[in-house]
Image (tube, rainbow, N blue to C red; front, side, top):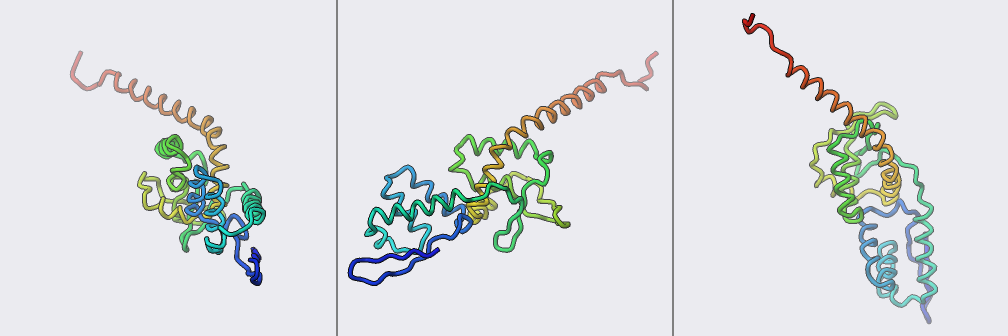
Length: 214
């Protein structure tokens, strides 16, 4: 999107502003989120600088009404972001995918997600995305498989910083509903494990034959 700025005594000059929220990477979004704890003037200045090619010197000289219009447009673009989750996406030619089925979510994945969220979602968004998404290893039409989860997410978290902020938002919307699904899945999983353990204990308690006793 184009933004025309006219300084007194000079011709209007055109600058580029993001066209949609999908133009923003997770890394760039996190930089802006960090600013929300500072002053509103600093937040506005850095947000416009992050989402446009306008030089900071010019941003500082913008009338407040122009700043308000630009910030309003950025907020509007973010608000228009779809919440429908796209389960696969590409980063630099590499395809990543979310679990095709929630039933396949492991206890280790859930535990890591819980830990990162408890430690502050805003501080751990790349890590959360690295748990949710992994490389697609095989695809057949809409069906696909992903790499097994090994808990080693540091490198993948760095890659996730290149995700579209829009993709992250839709994943977070999905994540907000994930807990409800897990409440259904987790108890049945634990019950199944308890039943298996009970059967194992019963078998171990049975007297062993063939010891020559009368």
